[in-house]
Image (cartoon, rainbow, N blue to C red; front, side):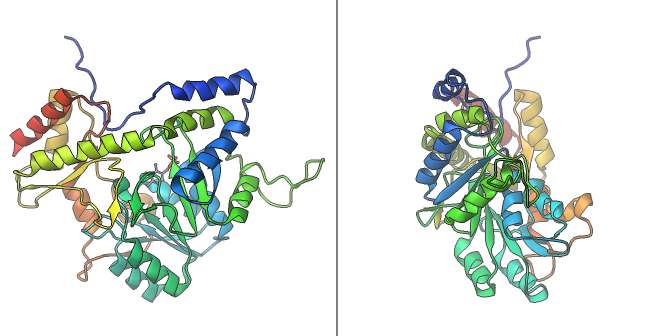
Length: 377
Ligand SMILES: *Cc1c(COP(=O)(O)O)cnc(C)c1O
């Protein structure tokens, strides 16, 4: 029997222009962790997002690490971080021997709960930073979160790894906090195969990150180092892929939005299905379309994922498992959204899943996915 074609969750979509920039790098022999594509990609990203200044790095995780380094997080420092996220949001806290404290999600956007954040500040009035994630591309409640953090004088790092192209009140996610980060991992809305970016309105901060990410070499002819550095810089070849991809980001966003809106339309008559919520103050990039199933439904997320895998060879994914439920973070403190201590993130994890959201999925494939899901209910 012939294998059915795989329907992807979110795979790279290349356009050809990427190769032009990569070819340029080869033609000029700029095959190095710096070069004209890197500089141009930083400038083009800064122009697109309005972030001010950017430093292209080898990964989004590296960008979070560098943001924490600039804030001088060290042994015992508390850092608040969104609980319903990928582990890359919080791993770098531990690289610096800091202490992650997890902040629950709220039901309106599935992002950091301002209520839980307030409670966390009551117990820990002086965290070193707050890392706020924009889950699946939906902007968090930035007004409330920024106000709370500003009142405490705590810097915000926006983990906009999933939300490049999303805006909140017309301004790009990643540009609200003191520092922001983007990811160009293979499954993100645009990709360089792997890569990330640190952004800030503060030019000195971006310069400092570039310095630390190239082994913290002092400006001297002999190799001299006064600080510990990292090999975190993006290569001129991968930056070329990024430049080509950036030309198509708005197009990717429009296609992702059409996928999300189609799911919303088609599932509107299935009361047990709730699509992942949007923030009315924002415009999401709809990186991944997610759904949650009513608690009293006989259908489980596993049943939906199994049906799509088995019948259509379609790739789904569970909702990120909350960080406070991870064995590696079992000893960390957690602040719930609900006053009774129950976790909104754990609830979404238990009832939710991510649907195939690849912009190359055809009309027929989308139809088959929707039909297969509906048949279960
Ligand atoms: C992908 C992702 C990251 C990490 O980005 P990499 O480029 O893979 O290191 C960080 N945070 C979130 C929320 C992500 O989804």
